[in-house]
Amino acid sequence: MLNAEYWEERWQAAQTGWDIGEASPPLLHYTNQLTNKQLRILIPGAGRAYEAIHLHQQGFTEVYVCDWAASAFAHLRQVAPDFPEAHLLVGNFFELDLTVDLLLEQTFFCAIDPELRPQYVQKAAQILRPGGRLAGVLFAHPFPFQGPPFGGTLEEYRSLFSASFHILQLEISPYSIAPRLGNEYFIELEVA
Ligand SMILES: C[S@@+](CC[C@H](N)C(=O)[O-])C[C@H]1O[C@@H](n2cnc3c(N)ncnc32)[C@H](O)[C@@H]1O
Image (cartoon, rainbow, N blue to C red; front, side, top):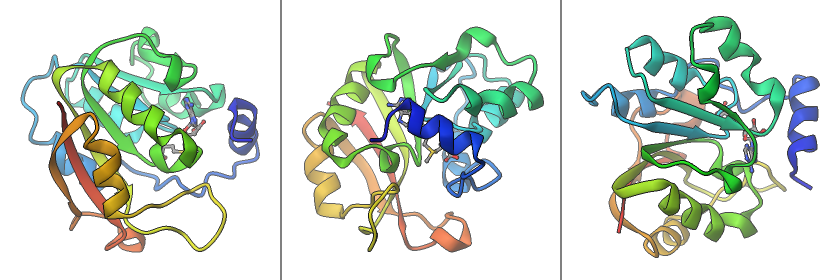
């Protein structure tokens, strides 16, 4: 079962093969175009939260990270000790109570049970203010093994997200790291 204990154990055992060791280049390409440093941004299932650290260092003041494995934020606390403690949300994404302008997706969607995908879409739409956006990457193909990670298809993503979002971008990212190049869609979705 993919519960908090499962993920905490993976952190404790250093089984973090998803971790690319740096801020995700497709996400950076997107966030580098943002000019409003007061934008409220949430990264769910943030793990070491490299993107949040980068945004914080760039002067973004309203960056929030959520992860229900308490160990996940050890790295962020060490590297960015002045990151506001109140912005570290240790808990279940599906139970969050906050509103943001932008949600950033980096290997959180692929980590949850695929049965929860409709709930992810609903929750993301609920957390975002009207007109808010969800941006990030999704794996472009199903994986030939039992996840996590769980992949998907263009058709599935279109049908899932169009229930609550206008699809602004859903295309293979040219900025993915080499091992993921060609297997990541960049998405930019606006709450309908
Ligand atoms: C595959 S890791 C990705 C971490 C980070 N985004 C990265 O790319 O390095 C998924 C993370 O999501 C967290 N997670 C899974 N389900 C969650 C939930 N329902 N609420 C909050 N965090 C969750 C896990 O603890 C884990 O740290």
